Length: 159
Length: 401
Image 1 (tube, rainbow over the protein chains, first blue to last red):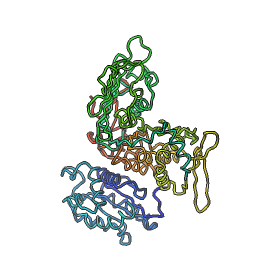
Image 2: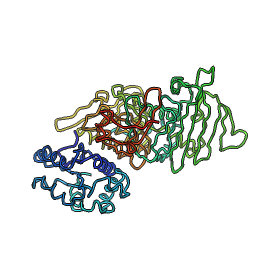
Image 3: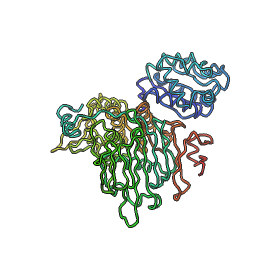
Image 4: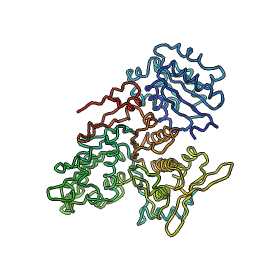
């Protein structure tokens, strides 16, 4: 029954528990939608890509309504986005979003942004209000292009 | 959709007798303090939920999660009118039968911008067969509304001689004191506490049948679901829109719920489903256990909008649900209570646990049955690896007193 695959839907695949908590904070703030669903933590960014390739590419090939957010840690490597994107088949790239903290989510806490749920909530508020107060943080601003796509394609249709 | 006009008028009169209009919503923010002492496994126990719109209690079987709900229920039952101490508590409710120490319940909540505090303590003097009230006090912003010691009650609103009176020390004063108006602090606090939802539904016992006696007060097993459904709609007919909206998301072929009269002063809920293959009307009692929980959740969400904001304590809301539903179910409740009201759940279910974060997950634990429940926020604990795996292998490192 969940989600309704006749309509656009979103799976969120987090690298680890910290990313899961950020996403939960985001989803709780944004309000309920059965069209977004949190998947189990992959335990590593390589694992995120592996699970995506092994499980979800096939699903996305058979259902054009499926979208995915891959939450990974960049571990100080901003170029990881391009590396990760090579795992996404070209015909699915419009429906896959790769986001993450430049270091790791714990760095956001250390930077004084609050606990994970608060940070997720602030990111959701930015998306809702069209602002960049939290997304514009040094540890997050490298996501700008992906966030713009998210705002354009996901926020209005799914959340 | 239910016909609202005559039924609504009739039930509104029943809920709000003597032409009293529905009283204004009470703006409940969050519990600031909840303290229990010498009640079952809760000794000197304080639940740290003051800054949390929603919280999850986890812990092993017997750690005290359900007992926290029972403690809320004691206060709720007092506010709903149970005043005889013997109907609320028994000797066995003292922690390890320790009846020489008073049993205490203390709650502090922010309501309509004011801080209300209510304390009640019970004791069992030697040669008594029934517990009695030792002391009781209600305050608003620190100012006493009334205070009581054994049988002697002092109303603060009157320092005159008649502001003091005696009552049976086997009776709790809170439900007995006459309120002066709907804005009376006593009235506000009592309504808030009475409207609190303490839920541990038993779907197999929920038939959907009801006497024509609508209420805003479901019992913990929600066996009076029909009356509660009618009460919420009678109080705020527009609540049906919320119920319908939720159920159409969860059950795509849901059409409507009707509550037709089936006898003298009796009704029975009928749920209608419809698709391009046709339609089907099912008595509520024939829904699956999980489907009944969806409808209960829909009414909780509607009640929080219509009659709240509320405090909702739900013991294992994931019971009876398919794995694919648990996350949505819990997140819907958390989202609904995020800005007003408070949602507290217990769970053993991995999907429910993963729908919370470490700051709003509280771990309850006991060393053994002779020791009291302890509580720590998950964020204060060192979790080695994945939380669910740690719970499965009983590997949480818990500090001992």
